[in-house]
Image 1 (cartoon, rainbow, N blue to C red):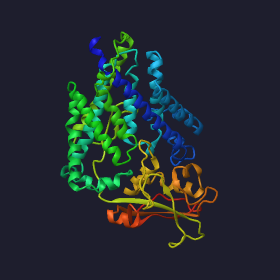
Image 2 (cartoon, helix red, strand yellow):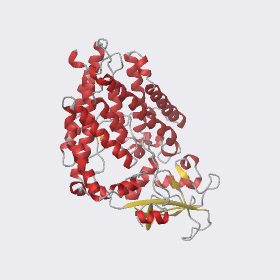
Image 3 (spheres, rainbow, N blue to C red):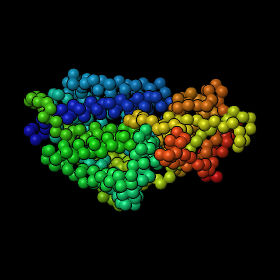
Length: 478
């Protein structure tokens, strides 16, 4: 059927598929390297305990049927292998049905991981990867012309990502309406990047222009995705440029990158490559695409209702397979940055003035002289949750105590999540404590004088000195 296909988007499909495979690779690599300490059999939030209380229909996953650390590692590394194969173009060497099965494999493996990942996998970009990854299954390979319905649904996802983020800002923090949120955002965002200090010190008129441009890109431009070419290409290109700007300003895992990937199918790249006529589209494939499109459009009523609701929520899945979700980010912006500093001592008695040594995390601020690094699109899950814990102890109640216990035990898997431990695994500390500090960026003059990009001030105790003889208690306000 002529209306079913869009010959001009063959190259766009190819670029999209290879880029999506790269995002899959990053996601599976992070899962393989971090799961043992976070959700493994001896992790902070073990999968076996979770699946024992959550039924399959609420969290469908392979790990509901069987869990062991070895099996999880096998699934994660299999996902890496599938992503590498897709990145290398293996789907183009297979028949259409084989290519679809190959794309289905990483989606099924990753939904299994996310559905048992608990707090560590509660981020919007997890659901976004799954929603986009499911659509990629039905995008086809070089045996068929890119189907219009799937291309439309990909634009529909991009619309919800951008428009949802724009609405949550306008409905949320008043500083977005006043164009002043970026006075604070670059300093208080979850994980600053190497250029965030410089972004923070841009003149305030530039920050106001950034905020205004963000509103245009998220509240106006998304509607242009559904207009004829070349307007749709221009709209998608503007979104890509905006996301690259965000990539430079901080570490947001693969959120920015998958949004860029999602914009690619809206680009008309036909002028760069002449594919020639595609083979006839099989009837079974047309039926499958139409059926899936109808299902996803029917499921879309809930995110649409969420968009128009005054009580809009962000980053919510409306079904256990994460097929259709709501998105959004930074509906509110913190004015002050607080950080938890975890310290240990080998002293026999935990004195205030004892020999306390700080653990250093890979991404989150700690040592005031250490400048932030670039980690995105790789996701440092513990570092991100430490940012949430600093906002409120409630975010850390389930896992902070187990983390402290594992530091006191010298658990190697937990220590691998850190940049530096002041104690070797075979000689762990006797006590652990956690203190809350206020962090602020230094000025240009302070940076030149001290070499420190942060200045910090003690706020309060977050966790009293704790030892294994007295099991670690959930953190809370004194």
